[in-house]
Image 1 (cartoon, helix red, strand yellow):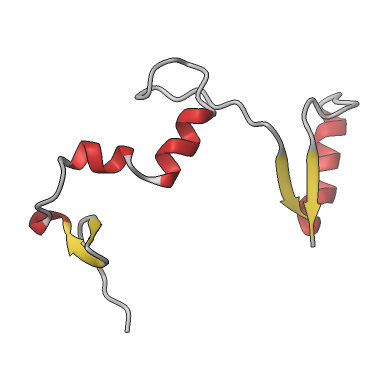
Image 2 (cartoon, rainbow, N blue to C red):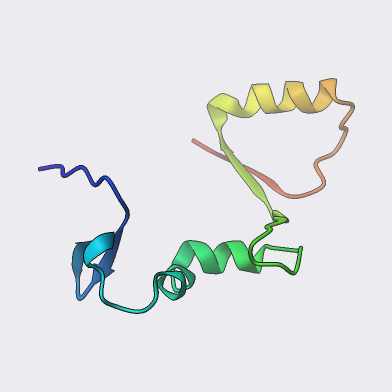
Length: 89
C-alpha cells in the first residue's frame, strides 16, 4: 500500500513518523545526519553548507544518453572530458 504524505517524514526507531509528530533531534540536526547531506557536503567547494557549489569527481550516464552527451560536448567545442565519464548499460 502507498501512503501519500503531505509533509516530510522522519525515520524514528525504524518507523516513519510524520514531520508534525517527530519528537527526536531538532529537524535541522536530523537533516544533517542523512547520507545525502554528507555526500553533498563532501563535494561542496563553497565553504558554506547553505550555498552549495558542487564539484563532481566523475559522471555516469546510461548508454541511451551517451550520443546526446557526446553530440552536445562536441557542439560546445569540448574535445576531452575534464573528469572521468562512465557508461552504464
